[in-house]
Length: 332
Ligand code: FE2
Image (cartoon, rainbow, N blue to C red; front, side, top):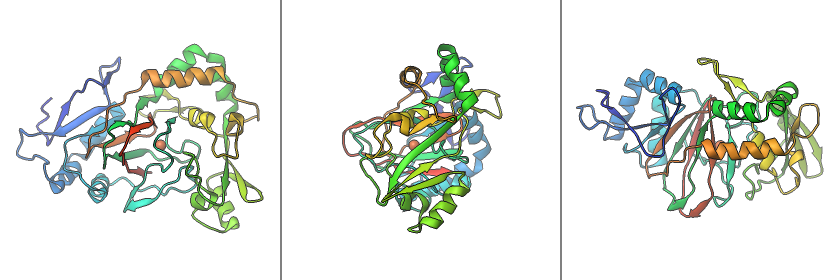
């Protein structure tokens, strides 16, 4: 569709069309038929600033936007794109994943083995104030595998409620508590393997406890490791604009753990707020439904994806043939 803007909406075979006709995700290319074509980084940044309300309306409607074909080459370029949107930065305090700052607001996405799958999640849904928006950037495109599938969270809620209404009611009543064993050092073998020192950005146990408390969490020390226990968190959110219920939790990713090698059974990573196990059958159905409903567009070098973290879950497929470098940035 020609919008008369420096962006052009296109459709790809992988996209899904929802009942309301909206495609998921939106895909934007530079609009080569206007004078204001964003073929240079500066022009792309200007275009973002000039059309931010329009871009935000697309994000709200579609849940995610893939920007393809824009001149974003390096993590610094990506940082400029994130800055151009001007959403407030989120500090990665209390995060479960091992991550390193690349430049400015850009971090490695998750440093665990790229050959292992990361199940669907809303970023940091195990904390009271998760990011509202996420950016991903394809610095090096995977040869085979390594996609970042995304799925609309309200669809997952509807399908879970249809198939397992008692399970959903039980979860809504008792909410969820997440647990993770963290050691002194990062565990690169796990997608939730950040050490307590990395997670709370300190070597001091007292400061770590204070920072955990600010995130409404508790720390229980045992020898060289600590059990990080979240506050009890709801399993759903209501979308402000649409009133739709979303499957806003970390159940799939916590269930599929284990969070570290020290944790060897699912029920130690997530349980109901009353301390009972979540149960297996419904979670297995959940994992199946997420895969059925998701969209996985293969990465192309230079792609930037903006995700509404409040309405869309994401995951990572195992990499089959390297390389793959997809740094990320999170916004409040
Ligand atoms: Fe993530």
